[in-house]
Amino acid sequence: MSSKDMIHLSQLLAIQRHVDRTASNVANVDTPGYRGIKQNFREYMKKEVEAGDGPTKSSTISMVSAGAEVLDLTGGKIESTGNPTDVAIRGAGWFAIDTPVGQRYTKDGSFVVRADGVLVNRAGLPVAASSGSLRALKSDGPVSISADGAVVAGNRLLGHLKVVEFQDSRAIRPEGNNLYNAISEVPRSVQANLAPGFLEKSNVVGAYELINIAQLTRTYENVLKLMLSEASPNELQRLSGQTETS
Image 1 (spheres, rainbow, N blue to C red):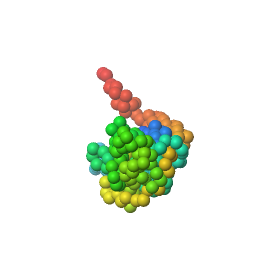
Image 2 (image 1 turned 120 degrees about the vertical axis):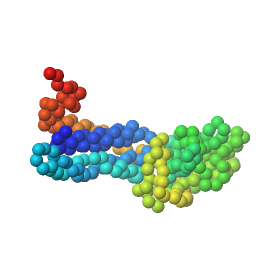
Image 3 (image 1 turned 45 degrees about the vertical axis):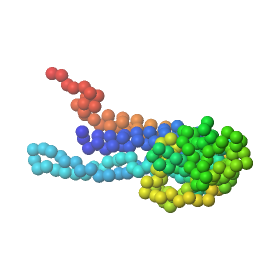
Image 4 (image 1 turned 30 degrees about the horizontal axis):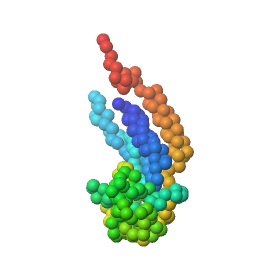
């Protein structure tokens, strides 16, 4: 494969990675508290060795790859739902969720009361408490959440939601199912400033992401056409899986 082909191929792979990430953002445009991910590109130099009858020559060619993925921590719009167990965080902070592999964190406050009385997230995982136990009895009455994170069932205080923050927000990474973690950071509990009966929407702007996909698709097609127009007949046969027959 020629150096031009290698450059074009690196561009195609980087663009495809960006398209996949943008498509994921679009798929989560209606997911409460979802944080979009931006894809960076980076250029790197690759040594190319030219073999021949004479002395071996080497040169460098400029390649492109998908760089680091950056989590967009911009807040989403807060909208009323009227549900007493829905809650949004005003400003900084993350809800803590108990999972089989330890606590994880989310901006999605669409909580419900499970059949056994435990307050859980959309995936059925228990919402973590900073105090008390967030489990209601059948005799308690309706469950509601207050602005300071207090969870009340009827007239009985069950406990308080655990809300945390990270010193270095750049360490936060998605782990799937709208849950996040920061391996290198120890979360610290913060005073909850919540909006009961509200949910924070995704911070993804769907129209922008769709335009981005369209632009990336056109760029991909243009690079592919350029790559095919510059390729030799033998190279085209190899790329298409065909071989010459005698």
